Image (tube, rainbow, N blue to C red):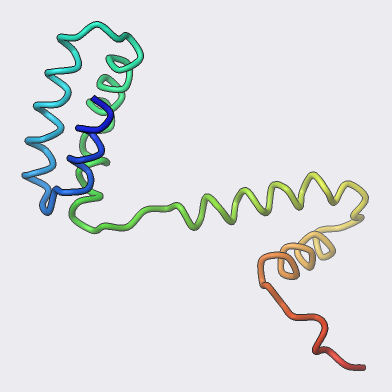
Length: 105
């Protein structure tokens, strides 16, 4: 089941093709035994429109989620920062990938 789902994602070239593949897969899974797969099929059906939109634009928000994780890590590390300017500076230094070795005074 997992392999078939991965094949649908990898080989679908259009929204219609992906929709047909996901519809067939969800039907197959809902008539099978594994409850975790049924839960996944229900989740796919709940987010049907958003999932199929990926096949129109081929872009995700993965980069933003990664940056958010980095900023949340900075937030936990920065427990002694006194104001938002210092927090903002820490975000820029960490996410900006600045090479501070080249800075001369």
